[in-house]
Picture 1 (cartoon, rainbow, N blue to C red):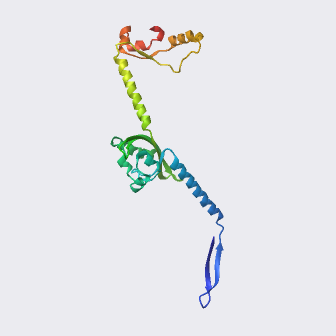
Picture 2 (cartoon, rainbow, N blue to C red):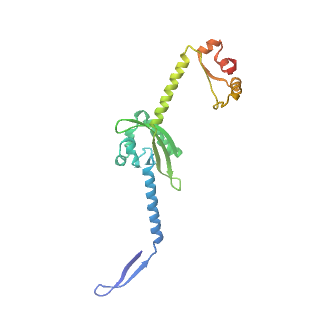
Picture 3 (cartoon, rainbow, N blue to C red):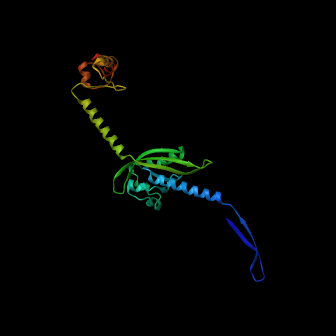
Length: 238
């Protein structure tokens, strides 16, 4: 890098003398190039990650200043919509989850991190379950700088969990209301036999050690005992 200036002119205003400095900026140029390459790698990583990455100001408003392009695939709104309207996400939170979601921001600011599941309304009207993982980024002096977060679509997981819950409810209703006697017996680990030679030994182990975990009223009526007494039986006792 060359820097110079004229320090003397002749009577006609033509330069006579000048001073100049020559500075070797090779290392600075290398550092700038390394920084550009690092930023490019980070941008490629963020923009091709399966989760949505966002950056918010470290304030309770959760003002957004960056969100990765995957947000459009997730809820139908382009990332530019969040930059043009940094608080747009307030309008997209499912009403019943809004207060809990706002509390997540406060938790992040207080505890440096938070994880919360909540619903968002997509542009096409669908309701999606989102898992929001947020981390408060601080500078070297411990001062809050911004919040970095990741949004994952967990709708399928939530739907499966709800389907399982309803199935268990139906099973429990059948169990409780059946006129036939039923009981449950839990095993800490699968028990199996591969050869007939150890079948009797396995059955003996089950009969003498495994106890019941639940029983319906019909079974209690058949044995004429209360629930506590029945749950202390082993399978051999019945």
